[in-house]
Image 1 (tube, protein in one colour):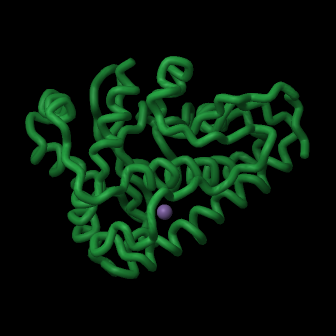
Image 2: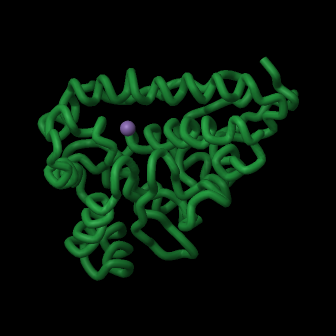
Length: 244
Ligand code: MN
């Protein structure tokens, strides 16, 4: 393996853009997935069974999405990484923020697959049934979007308005919450690539592979179902981490 940097980089966090700015301060608060930069990237533990989100997200979709799609992003990221002599990145977020420094012929591979790895890892952690926004979270949502209903409407609009494959996001940008979408596997940590940069708080995969088996072409039904499996505890954790 080509590793130009010998120092063992320990932090290498994955979740939450918050860690970019506050890696030391937020380390204990965030459910870190260690991605040692001298090792290959790997699928993170899902943390629940494939059927845990039934009936909103079906078992077969979860299994294929995690073991095939996400695994493929991880594999292709490792293939690209192996070809890059100067891999001087601290962690995955650092890769995402510096895609422009990657040799031109490998930029697309790293952009698509490092993005895919980060986005899916965050997405899995944001899924859980039967959670509710806390008072604190509601207050922040109300401050930024007037009401939870209004927030959901705007987020749904962004998810539905993503043409083709992509993601809908709630991000923290300059201290404010903002809803955006990105094409393909781009994300709001990709400096110099996406227009809207920020700390990811909520991510929703709107690629057809995320919902087609159960919902076919009915993306709206999938987005509606998402509200039943959004892990509000994780949202709160990321909101807090992004404020520190
Ligand atoms: Mn996906």
